[in-house]
Amino acid sequence: MTGTWRNWAGTVHARPAETVVAMSVEDVRSAVERARPRGLRVKAVGAGHSFTPIARTDGVAVRLDGLRGLTAADLPERRVRVRAGTPLHELNPALQALGLALPNLGDIDRQSLAGALATGTHGTGGRRHGIASAVTGLRLVLADGSLLWCSAEEEPAVFEAARVGLGALGIVVEAELQCVPAFLLRAREGSDTLSAMLDGAALRAAEEHDHFELYWFPHTDRVQTKRNDRAAPHAPRRPLPAWRAWLDDELLANDAFELVNRIGAWRPRLVPPLARLSARALSGREFVDHSWRVFCSSRRVRFVECEYAVPRASVGEVLRALRDWVDAHDVAVSFPVEVRFLAGDDVWLSTAHGRDTAYVAVHQYHRVDPGPYFAAFEAIAGEHEGRPHWGKVHTLTADDLAPRYARFDDFRAVRDRLDPDRVFGNRYLEQVLGA
Image 1: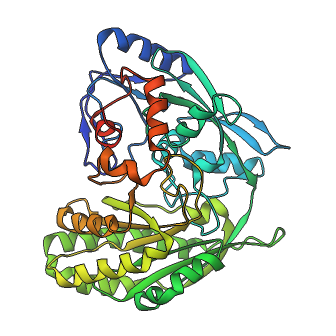
Image 2: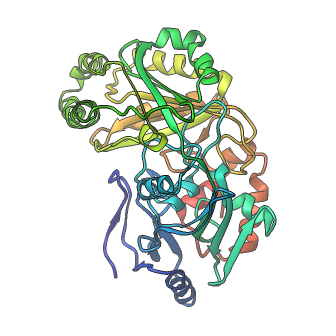
């Protein structure tokens, strides 16, 4: 099968020589074995939610859509094995049915499990870790078509590299995840000022709450805050009324916001007053629901995104510099800036490796040129040893990245061992890892 592939944002296109829809692990192995003699590179393709060309190929694109669902569950140990093409929005209710949950999630659940792991999808929580830290084992199809299982006990170097593997080591076909008992989150959403956040309120909230994030609306001093804490084990579930969920999460956050962005793209001078309107349109709310229902939200307004992980103590300086740049330049920013937090971890290419981290993400509507805004933000983040999200727009190269990751060369050594001929390579991997 051939045809044009596009990512979710419509910013990356490719015309693979062949597209394979894998329904089994053997289909993946066969695709790799057939590609090598033809000199074709192979890339796994998930939901296309990366803004970088990490999945682009002119060789063989292997869609993992058919590799879905749980393959095993050890309930006493709270471990499950999951096919790599399983979308997170299918995995979460499947875990719920077993009385389990992932300890942390991002705010979008459209990604495949393999894609979320490969790019380091993280979520928020000042004392928590990203999704990759829940991985206890991975099964990969290697460049010669063979299968390899890796864990902390078996092939530990491969395991450490593959938890955030960028698709550079092989095609992940199955993952083992360490879950926790299913839990409820008490969500409290409200508003505040950026000035207060810059004065230390954001850092305090990241320590005080299980999961904290904020959204700053450029051209204003307003922020929306989300403080989510684990409810007591037997607390009652109190979800939002259906009408309120529709009003806030569909009508305002999607339909009305799409209109605001279309108007802003047509008349950029209207963006600042529209931003002030948007900042005040979302009122406070409180509810208690299943963790994954609180973590994840519907995002139908298409955008492009650039996100950097910076040392947590630097987040105030980064936001202050970004605010000053926006105020000093004739630029229209209709999307809020998202700020999240994670504890440092030991995953080799995790953007939180070795340090407590703040994530600052900037967005632009997909019909607007993000170039000057993103370039300014990258320069600001670079002054604070920022690490770009692997699946979001950035311009850094291997030479830039190597000093920012203590295990960068170890990762490249594993890659050289598993894929010396770069069967799984593409231009993006050449950019961020070297040839």
